[in-house]
Image (cartoon, rainbow, N blue to C red; front, side):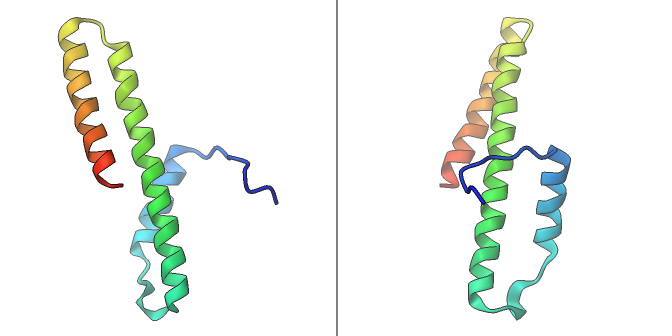
Length: 87
């Protein structure tokens, strides 16, 4: 299988997958499985946050006036700051 290929899945499936994974108690599993689990969950959450950040940016572009554009930009900058803090 080619590991460089990206796939598209519906956002609702991504959110549901994260929700289900967060319900799993990995304490009973081997440490290596816990590490893989945490890596997968972290990657999915980062992807979701990146999508939310992209949506916040597009809200700036779609703004109808200066006030709504300014508000959308402030929201985007807040989200971007929070997203970068996670790294």
